[in-house]
Image 1: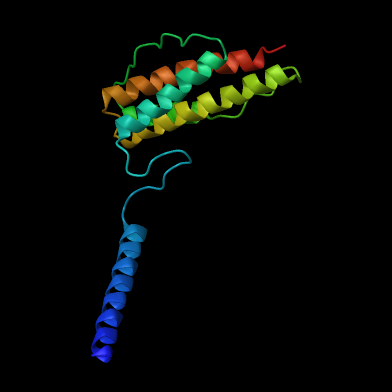
Image 2 (image 1 turned 135 degrees about the vertical axis):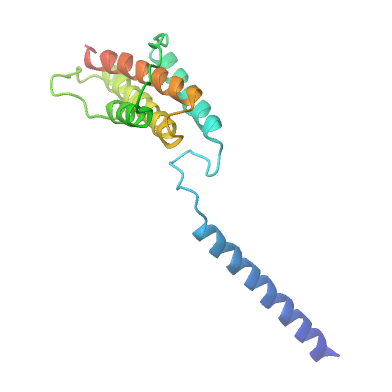
Length: 159
């Protein structure tokens, strides 16, 4: 009887190990993209856009600057290219003529600018990944980039 119980327990453990290994393999080979830090893997694109857009709003509030009214999204021919270009523009390095003062306030302002622009860039990459045809994503990309431009001006003019 003891040997039968041992065999049953052994089979049970083997099955559990096999299931765990299979689950790991499925997760490792699933076709989802890797999540950015703070991003939930498999989250709906609009929910992720909303999360990033809210972060931009919070960071703009910390700068004590209202979010600007973005220009209307005008996407005529190649929206994917336009959204990809917007993502690249948002995350481009600061120009050499941008020389904020070396103060804690300016340092904080420029860190917020970096975060705002990175989030805007991520929104625009999502919009491009959606094929450039998602009006909601495109509008949030345009809005995020408008906020990024204001934050860049605030950082570069910090004295």
